[in-house]
Structures are given as C-alpha cells and as structure tokens.
Image (tube, rainbow, N blue to C red):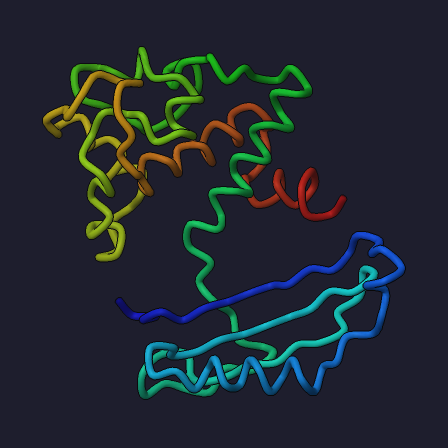
Amino acid sequence: MRFLRTLAICLAATLPLPAAFAQSIDYKRLDERIGRLAANEEIVGLAVAVIDKGEISFANGYGVTERGGSPVTQETVFRWASLSKGVAATEVAILADRHQLNLTDTVSKFKTSLRLPGGAENRATLEDVLSHRLGIVPNAYDTRLEDGWDAARIRRSLANLKPLCPVGDCHTYQNVAYDTVSEIVEDVTHAPYADAVRHSVFEP
C-alpha cells in the first residue's frame, strides 16, 4: 500500500469540559508522546491537529509521507480514504431529514452508474449501500480504481459479478459501490458533491 500505515489524526476538544478537567493542554508533553509513537517502526508518518475552543491550537507532522518520501508537515495533504464515508453518510442523513430522499429509496430511483448482478440495483436501497449489504464480493474492483479506471465505468461493471448473497442479507465492505452515494447526492441536490457537502456539512 502506497501510504503504508500513514496516519492522519484530528483530535477535537470543542465541547465544554468539567471544571476538574478544564486545564490547559501540555503541548510539549503531547509532542513528546506523539514523537515516541511516531518512532515505532510500524508507523511511517503521522499528522496531529488539536482543535480547542474552535481554534487550531496545535498542529505538527512526524515521520514521512511514505517510505523514502518527504517529511510530514503541517501542510501535508493525506489521503483520507474511508473516513470520507462518514461524510457521505452524514450528507445523506441531512437530506433524509430534509425529506429530499428516504433511506428506503432504491438505488434505481436516482441517476447513478451502479449496476449490480441480476439488476439488484432495483432492489438495493440507499440503506443497503450505506451499510455495505449489496451482496457482492468485499472491496469489489478496488484494484481497478487504484489503476486509474473511471469510477462510473467500474460501478457499471459490478453487474458482471457473481452475487454472494441476496441484497440486504450479508455485509461485504465496499468502496467503489459505496461511492455511488456521491452520485445520489448530486442527483438530489443538483450540485457537485463537493459543493453539497461543503455547504451542509463543513461550513456549519
């Protein structure tokens, strides 16, 4: 894996703390402890940011971006990978709360490229997508995504897979199939996915 165990961590301390804990953070000690963690040979690189009372109060990089790569700094952009699934699910929950979609809506109700074996996109619900219950092999065609294939083309090709179970019956972790959520969000909001989540998730 290119970013072998490279980590990006954001520690947020934004909620009011009980008086007994309402003391300043010892950033020198924090830095030393993270430095010891980063020295572990299994850790390639690490970035830590602390947000205290809505402000970034500490940010530092440790190690390198990949073995033999450049040092991690405050400006290093990490691949956030499956952490983005939480953003996608949050956006869908917001749209459901606004009655712009329903978790029981089938994938075929929206303009998406997702095609499943036996036309199962006509039975698979948005809830099935979000909970990885599409009945196909885990991590289906992830390697094609890593090889630079167009994501929509890969999603269409999922129809050629042999199903492992009926939709909704078993959990098989997905990336390419899960990303159809971005298409659903764009179909519902009539805006690019990045703009939609920026407006309703990140800006608030």
